Structures are given as C-alpha cells and as structure tokens.
Length: 444
Image (cartoon, rainbow, N blue to C red; front, side, top):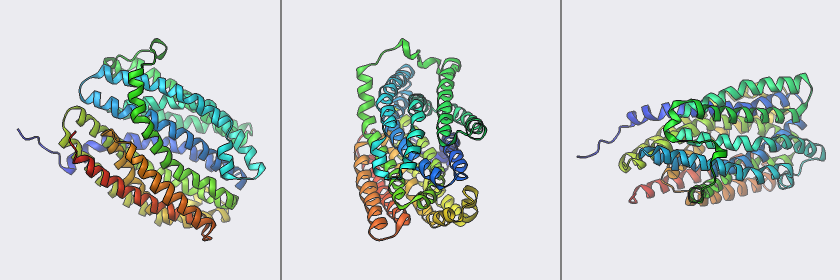
C-alpha cells in the first residue's frame, strides 16, 4: 500500500508543538545574556565592550563543544523512532561522558583566553575586565555541557518541554543573583559571570533530578553516570557525527562572534552598538532554532521508523515554515528599531551606532533561519561534513573576510561587517538547501 504523505498544514501542526518549547527555552537562555547587557549598558561603554568580547569568547567555545555533544540528537532520535529505547538512553549516557571529556580543555582555554584577546586587541582596561569575566565561566562550562547532553536527548525523544522548564527556571534565578551580586554587593561585570555559573549548576542538577523521577524516562534504562563507563563504539559514533557538526556550528558561530572581536578594534561605541544588534538577532534566531530542532527531530524519527519519503517531505515543510516566520519577524524588528534600541541604552552615541545595523538584521535573519533549518535536516540524515565546508566558504570567506575588507579598507565600519555577514548567510542558505535536495535524491 502506498504510504500517505503529510500535507504542509499537517506538518506544521506536528512541528509547532516541538518547536515552541525550544523557542521559549532558548529565548530564556538568551535573556540571561540580555540581563547582563541591559545591566552593564547602564555602567558605560567600557563594561559593555568587555561584556561583548567576553561573551563572544565564551559563546564561541561553548557552542563549538555543544555542537559535538548534540550529535546525541540524531543518533538517539533514530533509535527512538525504531522503538529501541534502551539504545537511545545509552546514546545519552555516552553523550554525558563526552561532555565531561570536552569540558576540561574548554575550561582551560577560558582561564587563558589569549587567542580571543589577540583578535579583539582591546585596551588594557577592557582586557582586564574580560579576563575577570571569563574565570567564573570556566567553572560554569562543565555543568553547561552536561545540560546540553540532556537537551539533545530530551528533544530527540519529543520531550522539549522538559528542557524548556529548566531553562525558564534559570531566568528568574539569574535576575535574582544579578540583583544580589551586582546591585546589592556591587560586584560589577565579574559578578554577572558568577551568577551565570550558579544558573548552569542548578539547571544541570535539575535535569538529573528529572531523569530519576519522571516515569517517561524509565524505559530508557538510564543509570547514574558514575555507575557507567565510557563505551568506545558509542563514543566513536558520537564523534563521527559530532566533530563535523561541532566544527560546522563553530564556524557558523565564529562567523558571528568574531564580528564582535574585530569591531572592538573600532572603539568602545561601535562594539557597544553591535552588542545591542547581537542580542536582538540572537533572540530572533531562537525561532529558527526551534523550527530546526523540531524538523530535525521528526526527520530523524521517520528515518528510524523506515519512512524516508515522509522524512523528506517533513524536512521541506520545516524549511518553508522557517522562511515565512523569519520574513515576518525581521520586518517587525526593522520597522520598530528605534523604540527597541531605546530599551537597551540611554546613551545617544551607542543608539546611533546600533540603529543602522537593525535594518540589516531583517535580511540577516532570513538567511540565518533558512540555513539553520537546512543544517538540522541534514544532520538528521547524518550529513555534517559538507555543511561544514559550506560554512567555511560562506561565513568565514564571504562573511568575515568580506566584512574585514569593508570595515577596515572600504571605511564602512561595523556596518560593513553586517553587510558581508548577511550576504554570507544568503550564500550558505542557498548551498545548504541545494545539498538537502541532493541528499533527498540519494537512497537512504
């Protein structure tokens, strides 16, 4: 009998319940950074510049390592789609071991952040603030990566709300800790980082508690981590998919975060204006992340259930929905850019630096959304190496390389970086969509 294929409306009704918890949860994660930006924005351009460079360094490192660990999603999702719950749970256990292995070199690099400071070339005063800010984040990295393993696993088995709940709980805790450490005790920028470290620890412990007390996870046979040991075969499978995933995500993120490091050379005001635009486009990105996660989850589950035709169609439907949502959201931000910037800073010079960038945010987000969902669909098919090559050419070559030339040689400043980055994302989106079409023509 011919397999019935879902309509676009049917796919949307399946995608949205998986996408909105990811969107809400990641928006809460993003809001943690926004809390620091708003608070430091009142302190002056130097603190905001140090925050921009420090966050760029941490996010670059964290997201690269996160990408490797998130290989648990496509692997556990396929096992779940095939009905093999203990095997799916075993993938998660090994992802936790991988998280601990990656956390050690990551934390060391945060304690000795010379590569990031060499790129930024900030003043000695700002450099000292960046170093102090990154030290508490070195302690935050291990629990943060363990929570990433839980996030990838829970999402792959269609439980994104479990992740969302702990991410939402982190936001009021972050605000409370900031008020105590920054406002009450006058701790400044470093206190913001200690507050973030506290949030990461609570979220990780909360996830472990949920795994022990929610009956849904019992069939997955997930034991305590100290009762298990690393398994070479499963770790190899995670690394085989995770290393190109992590490298691709690292290139994607550094194509964005390196903008802050290079723009820092232009002075405190341009990088402060850039930081405002970064927070906005990062918040908008969460819609694409939610749709990409939902699309990748469903595609992986259908592939595990040996339904490749449905998997292919659901992937295209996720891409179409992402384009519609991104176009509407980008238009709203561009049209309301003046009152939005006013929420971030009272300083006229910083606002003037941010406003021209928000027009480009519209087009930036459209390309970003399309390439993000395409990448998730490809990862569900266990295709990660070619997307990494696309990112290197489009985001580093066109985005960073072109932006550097426009900013420092054509005299366009921060706006030059945003123009080049937008064009680079458009190139990546088109190439990744072409790659999706090619993968769909191959036998599963």
